[in-house]
Length: 109
Image (tube, rainbow, N blue to C red; front, side, top):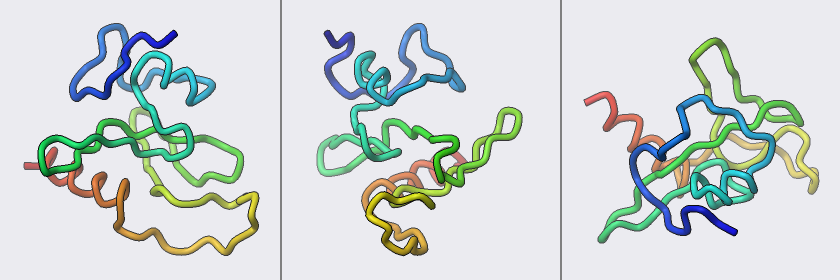
């Protein structure tokens, strides 16, 4: 059973920035993040795509950094312990990474 079935922008009642969850499937059930594989989820709004959430993974080969109330997100597209053993490349500004860049610039304005 899903609590919030659609993607949304803005605060979700009862959830605070920095809340921690064990599994991405938990986030999907409460309607926070629907992409079970990718760390950046987004939605279409008119002719634009908007980033709706960023979920960082700690450990298991990911290189995201957590320090106090700051998260450094390494980007969407691979981790150091990739199951298919492909070579990790520099991040590319496509899909989620592109939307993350746009969202971070808009927050600074």
